Structures are given as C-alpha cells and as structure tokens.
Length: 417
Image (cartoon, rainbow, N blue to C red; front, top):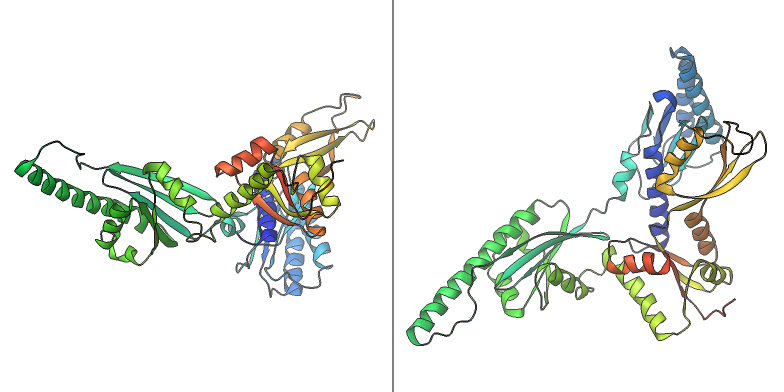
C-alpha cells in the first residue's frame, strides 16, 4: 500500500479486529452488538431501529442478558446522537458486555467503503466483513526457468508464497563426438522442449487457479526464459498476463528472490518490494553514517518531538500495550507490558487474580496505552509519514530483530541527547 497514512490506519484496524475476535460475551450470552452502517445510511432510521431493539430486549428470557443488551444499545444510541455526519467509508460499531464484565465500545472507520448494512446481536463480534477488506486482492505469478529446472511462487501485498519447483530430464554436457554428438544433441533438444512444455503445464495449472491474478513475471537465463515465452507454453488465458521477463542466474527459491530484486519497476506498486526498499534506504543511510537516520525508542521519539522525522518505519510485530492495573479497594497499582494478541487472555487471567496487597478479587484494568498508536499519532501530528513493515521480508526481520522494530528516516541530522 503506497499511502503511508492508510498503511498505519490498516495496521490499527487489523490490531483492533484481532482483539475483537478474541473477545467473548459474559457467560456465552447473545449480548454483543455488531452494527454496519454504509455511507448514506440514515442516522434517524438507525436510531429508531436500535430504540425498537432496546424495547424488545425487555422480553429476553434471561434478565441478565436482557440488561446487557439494553446497556449496549443505550451506549450506541448515546454516541449516535452526537454524530453529525457519517464517515465517507461508513462506520462499524462493536459494543457489548464481554467476559471482563464491562460494556466495551469499539467504533471502526473502514479502510474502504462498506456496502453491507447489518445489525447483529450475538455471542461474538462479527468482524469478518472488515477483515475481507484487509486482504490484498491483486496477486502476481512468479516463475524462473532454465534447462534444468523451474520454480513458481505467488506474490500478494507484502507476502510471497513459494509454490513448488520441478526438475528436468535434460542431460548435461557429454564428451562424445561425430554422429553420436549430433544424435545426442537432437535428443537433448527434444528433452529441452518437453521440459518447457511441462513447465508451462504446471505454471498454467498453478496460476489459472489464482483469483485476481494481475500479472506474471518470468525469469531465468536469457535463452531459456525467452524460448519459454516465445513458445506459447502457457495456457492462452495467461499469455497476455506476462508483464515482463528478467535475467537471473539462479533457479529455485533463490532464483525467485533474485528475480524480485530485479523487478522493482515491473512490480513497483507491490507492497512487498516497497517495504524492502524502505528498510534498505534506512540501512544505506546508516552504513554511510550520514546522520540522517535514528533508531532506538528514546532517539526516535526525540526526533519526532523535534519535527525531524520524514518517514517512520514501524514493525507490525511491535504490538505492545502498556496496561495499568489497579485495585479500587486498597489503591494498589502496577504497569505491565502486554502483547496486543495476548491482551484478551491477560484480561481473563486478571479476573481470576487477587490483589497482592489486600487479596481483593476486584483487580481491574484502569488504563491501556497502545504504544504504536500513540507514537504514530505523535508522528502524524508532526508531519511525518508512517510505514508499517511486515516480517515477511528479510529486511522486515532485520528491522524487528536488530533495531527493535522502530527506526526513522530524518529530514535533517539530530544532535544526540
């Protein structure tokens, strides 16, 4: 995704979805409300519908469930009354009493316009339609071929999947001469042609099954790949999808990766290559010791505060929440760092824990702070661009493991504090 703000917004929505999918209603009750409202939805109509639903909640057999549904709908209604306009992409609201025992309210503005209008009261939140928006739809077929082998992969967004490889029966060099040499050469050429045809059959089978296939890139030594493309070895439905060929010296998975390194122009809008380039730019500046980069939380935050950050690179694995736990009975408090994907389990464990000071069973989460959301907001407010980097590339792993998942490209050098 080329737009930096949407990269950050998509990350935040993905994190929210993952948290919502782990949440459960108290006692398995059907009291978690999911509300999808496309742009153009009449707020008065929605308000009337929810008011009617709140009225029927009194008829729910379980008084506790009825009370929870009423509370959730009242929470939504009070907020809808404060809305003046619907966001251009619509709005999705999740609200209800979770296992934590409290009413939680989660409004999400989608990254793309929603067309589905839906109201559901269930024992879980329905996030599947939001999650569909996060799936990168365009895919690219990747293939490298020489006289000895062929390999295939798929590229979607920031993720590359190696599919398979195959070998050939084409013999190597031989020492015979005369008529034997010519006979062996003819046989070798027949086997080479059969190899290209077989490689095309496999490519066609793999790539025809791919929905939203935007293009195919073929790599390999000049002669082999050109013979493959000119020989119409692919299914006719795929021939027009070849967007380019690339000279590479390897085959197999190594050849696929080499081809991708040389396909920046062909695949310039693909997120996988964008992420690699962002981190490579940081590493180049770091290696040249230009002073135009910062890394380490203290140094990066200082650069943001000074307005010196041009582009902030954040690993998607930096999903830490700072959680403040408090005991309302004795005033005890502590702060824990919790991975976002572990936050729901952390909340569940907390409900079973007692206060270490007074042994009360009323420990609660007093405050949660999403570190990435906070630093991202601060960066955007200072005019910085933000790129969320996955760990699907070698560069992404370097960013996360070697630099703690947080680095910055600077507008100007910053004096160390």
